[in-house]
Image 1 (cartoon, rainbow, N blue to C red):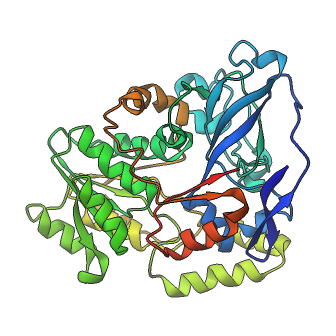
Image 2 (cartoon, rainbow, N blue to C red):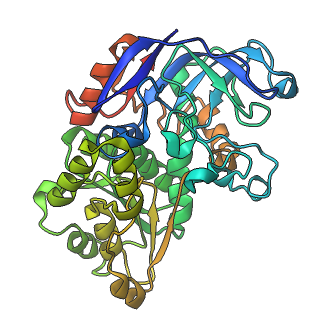
Length: 395
């Protein structure tokens, strides 16, 4: 089958790889009908590349049709079912899963790396599980993970249940915005776009979106957010405080992560680490990795006193400095982590099924490409060219 694979040296390529097969009794095989490029995939280029091996299949946002089902998954899935596959692989029955903490599933934890639940297509840190940017996908723990959806509707009505919708939903829930309160979303990529829409849907009276890409700012404004252009303010945190009663919004959401704009010296350090031999780069990353913290610092300094900062952007640093004295003095609450996808999908699914499309799932994708053009899609998304906000690939 065709799949997008890592080739080393920040290079990806569509290649032929063996078809997946049932390996465990609770596996399923799906024929992928749509798969998306996620902002987290871009971290693989320059930051997490040392944890990949040439030939690894990428991608963790996928949906499709069930082709084969292992005997222990047969009670949940049948041939021909249409499903969305959560990006984290969870069993549904361990201690963590029993508490809705599916991203920390104890059955699939990658203990050798000290990490949580296994993820599709996301490095040896998370289990080296082949990903979904391919024609077919093996789905472990299929007795629990896949979400069945109706036939006869556009893929993009449901595709984002795989990751970015639950990630944005969790970010807003973690932000704990009071009814009628205010929230600022830093970073208006796909997760930030959904976070802004979800916050408004869940009762925020003011939603402020921060970015510098014109197309992202315009899309957020179309869905009711006030916007702040990074290139038009000297101090984002000060601007947020001034905008909201001189005290700042009730909550802020960092939807950017480790590759924020700015932080040139840190960016150079990340680049230099990526040029080291993988074995050395892994040790450096594990012990002294640093992040570009511009977005997180703005979120921490721009929220009101006793407010909440919710972090959905991916970070990989080990020695990053934070303004802890200020956080303590101002009584900031901080929540973060991988999305517990299945914890939120029952809440989200009725909205996705609603023909009115209240979360605008059909108003996010800007580029639809065949899998053969995945390399160009990655480059366009990474470089924010051609008005690119979200790329969906069709195998």
